[in-house]
Image (cartoon, rainbow over all chains, first blue to last red):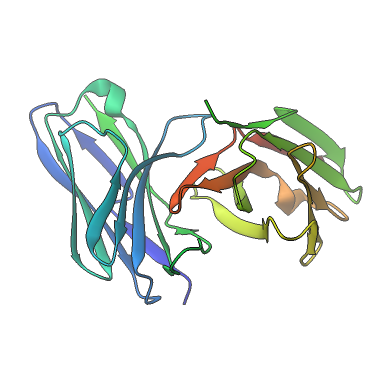
Length: 115
Length: 111
């Protein structure tokens, strides 16, 4: 099973709403990632979790709050977003190999629209 | 700053022909390179990777070439099929977990 699942597939929210994006993998991977992708642009790294601990935060605004409840789950909590935050949010995972990077497997993404 | 870039934003090929997608990178310390395929409405899909101690790696219908002298990466797709139509991203790995994607090349396959 090389599948990363993400829910919901689509999300429309107002600027005052609080919502969460969810990601799940059952490949035993110990590294999980959040990326943001705008239309016709490459994915941009937001956060990296390694062994359920946040290891990289790419200076992401605090209105995005990641959470890794366990090794299979990754959440992204959203609050007070701006219309420019509308994008495809991608989750990925990889088998964390000390000192070397393994292949990242991506989920299908959540298409977020902020009104 | 460091960057990964592509020479051509779009590539149109005839079905059955071979495709070559090129990519330049600027960080000579990068030691891991990946090609991803992204179809419309989907997440990036791993195609093939190569580490800096290699200069060529082959998969099923795909070959990745790495030229560290000129910091150049290419993806060759043999006998291109309509299902190969997608955006292709090269990516390099820097500083451990951080993967940086290039701008992407859209491949059109004409039947």
